[in-house]
Length: 76
Image (tube, rainbow, N blue to C red; front, side):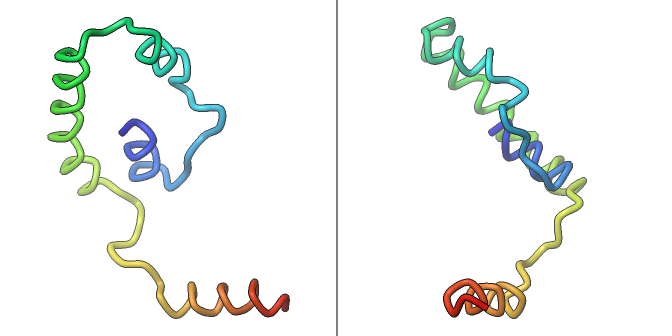
């Protein structure tokens, strides 16, 4: 969800992830299940706000993607 937020607001995903320590803490059991669900519900509600602020276009450029696909497949 944090990667989705970054993608919507910046158009990029940073690697390594800026919150990698928090993700590792989640994996290592820092939070109980209910806390994780609560955090995800909060972020889920925020996605509408992030989407409205997004710099990304509303729709993919299908023609551009098709052209890129064929360039890759045909090795052009």
